[in-house]
Image (cartoon, rainbow, N blue to C red; front, side):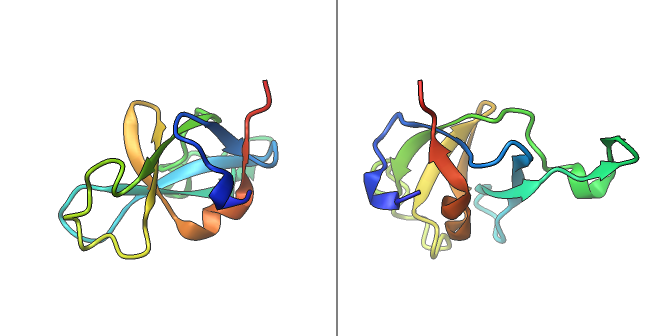
Length: 108
């Protein structure tokens, strides 16, 4: 996905049917969580439910909220390299920059 084409309110989904949003806590104490895209691990035909899958989100669609400036998060100097945010399953997440190559807009 080309990041310059993002618009606030745009729906996003992983590019492949076997990829999912996965969340992790960003280092620091400001409480921001990040998402990246990964394949969902399987074990003998069923989802492997161990610590490797603990951050996987069930939703496959997220809403693009905007940048740090749009969300008034400029004072969070710890968020170096993280500038764009999405809304997923009732939470706001920063998007790990390499994840943008695995996201696409939802076509209605």
